[in-house]
Image 1 (cartoon, one colour):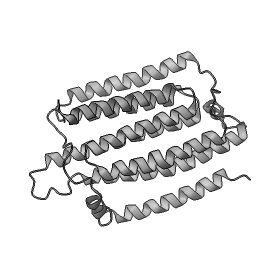
Image 2 (cartoon, helix red, strand yellow):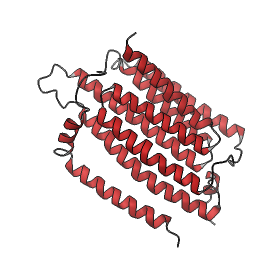
Image 3 (cartoon, helix red, strand yellow):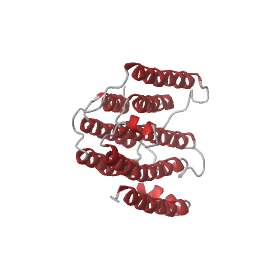
Image 4 (cartoon, rainbow over the protein chains, first blue to last red):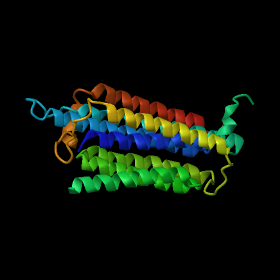
Length: 111
Length: 167
């Protein structure tokens, strides 16, 4: 399968995530769109890892070529989990103070 | 048209439609459920590329843990109704135009790139995605980043408790 198919699919998902961040006001939806963008990047990393593996099939020691990409996806998932826990704690605290999850409440840090 | 292509198009359509529904549904709970559908479609892509470890971890961590956390927060705040204030229609239009033009530029760039023109990826063969190979590399070459990851998790846990506790 040509690599362009996966690149374009990930770009479509990534741009849907960007559109969500730009157009929605609910903080939780914005956060979910960030998760969508992270997943698009993960998909592209796995596709590139398989592309490098396919390119080096005839090389002498090809057994582990491309596995760094999949390990990087693993670390991205770890960072995403940590980010979600802290971010949702921030959203809960903001909801406790303002009784709203509207992102426009955050445009003034004072008061 | 082989079965791999049919599965690819089916999973891609599922992922894109579900991602659009995340944007367009007014109820946040429905958005979470559509996002879980996106994660399952992406896990299907991982299985299609024989990245079995990542497929399972994607389902367990994302669809299992993170989305349950989102659902808990939404239910705790009692947000499962359409209370989102109306945003200015011009702002929405500007956001959609910005994302659409970024997508157009990226797609035209990929179409012109000559380095990518004859590169193929190996779809359902190859064993770099299996747990055995990834575990060997993770615990030999990448053991220090793996341990730093645990410190990151500990600090995130402490941070979540400190931020979220009632003072």
